[in-house]
Image 1 (tube, helix red, strand yellow):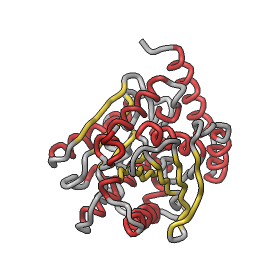
Image 2 (cartoon, one colour):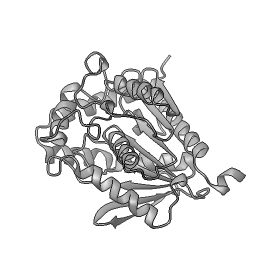
Image 3 (tube, helix red, strand yellow):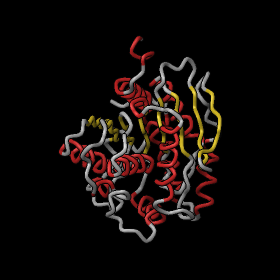
Length: 303
C-alpha cells in the first residue's frame, strides 16, 4: 500500500499540473516553473558551477567524495519549452550522488524560439566537446527525463548513424518517444503531473514544420539497433507509460541490452521528489547502481 508521503506528493503533483495547465503564455509558464523550484536545496556537500561550451550554457554538478572518473551527461525535461531550473538541478545532483559521478547538464535552446533541431544540435555539440577535452566514451552515461530523454535518444541515434563512438549507457526517465501521441496510455492513464492536452500543445512548438515521424523527433519510429545499454523508468499511472514500454520492446527487438522498470502507482518523473518521496529515492538509487555497473572507472571498481 502506498504510504502517506505518496498521497501527499501526489496532491502536490496534481496541484502543479493544474496550475501549469491554467497558464496561457510560454514566458509565464517558464517564470512559474522557475519560481516554484527555487527553494529546493542542493544536497549537502554538492557543488555546482556554470560554464559555456561553444556558447551553449552548461552546468557542472560535483558530489562530495566523487568516486572515479565517470560522468553523467544530463538533458533536462520541460516539454522542450521550459529551461534548466532548480528542480532538475537538484534531481541531477541526487543522481550524481547515487552514482558517484560528476554531472554535466546542458541548458539547451528552447522552443518555440528555437524548434527542432536546435536542442538536439546543442546536445551533440557539448558531447563532442567532452570527447575533445579528453573524456572517454566508456566513462560517460547520457541521461534525461521526459523531453530530455527524447533528446538523449536523438543524440544516440545521431551518433550511431554517423558511426561515432557512443556513451557507455543511457538512462531514460519517463521518456517521450512518440510525438504523434499514438500510445494507448497517453489517453487512458490518469497522470498526476502531466495531461495529454499540455503535452500536445507544447510538442507543437518543438516540432515546428517538421515531420513528427522523423526518428530524431520521435525515436519510437526509429531503429534502435546498435544503441548502448538502456535503463528506462516509467510510472504505472503516467500517460507516457506506452512510450517507455514500446521503447523497451523496440530496443530489445534490435538486440539492445534493456532494463525497463515500471514503478507502481507513480506519475511522470516522480524522481523530482527525491529524497523526500521514498519511491523517488529508490528510483534514483537504481539509476546510481546502473551507472556504476556500466562505466569504466578504476576507483569505482576498487570499492
